[in-house]
Length: 309
Image 1: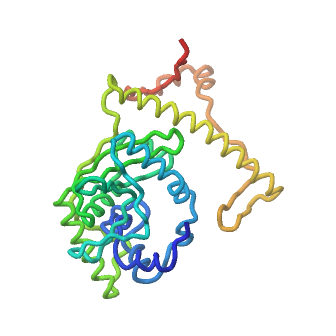
Image 2 (image 1 turned 120 degrees about the vertical axis):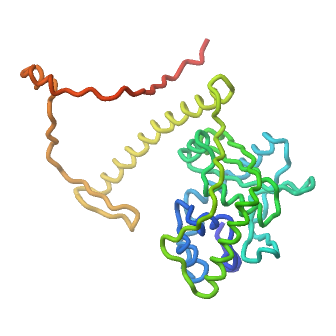
């Protein structure tokens, strides 16, 4: 769904949850200066809606909300993304929740993600990334919520990670102060530095679902690992097919570029020289005295088990 100029104008009038982490220097993708350029200097992202990540989210978000309802017993519904939510006490901010449950009071909201499989796996094992937590705290501040229902759907296994995130008022106070300062400076044409960071307190980590090997979580982790390994194998095959296709269309070219998407080099290189330590020791046993033994370390290997009886 392409965003209209009217929507973009309203989106850029105030700070939304997806930009909150960048403003305090906690985003892995954007800086506070990037957000300033977009909001106050008119430099919009190119193809804001034309990316696999956005299309995947638009397609699978209804399924994620359905799984969230099934798992929690709630009655969440998608929130229209044209209905910006504001709080008169923090007029520099807005909120666009992904889903709401307005059947019961107080009305609760959800943040729904359909990330890449590898990103979902990291969240499942390690917990919710800080930048997502900051987005949730921002949205709770604007909505006035005490909790936000965070849900992430794996687009491969269709497994749902669900964790309720509670309001952290101390963090919200500092976040709103940083956002207000950024907004007021922006209105005056004062841009943040490229590496601007806030002294905002750190949020406590929110662990993933894997906790005990003797619980159901152990089964979930094992299934996720197995699915990821299968996905990795399939991905490697797809990458190799795509590579072969590129080389086929490139012909004899040794360096080529495709419309600013990829720059490729296909050149012949000399074979690498390696040292045959086994042969050297066989021919010169006295060299064995130079061998060093490192510290002990653990290795991990996982073998798929048959489910047949």
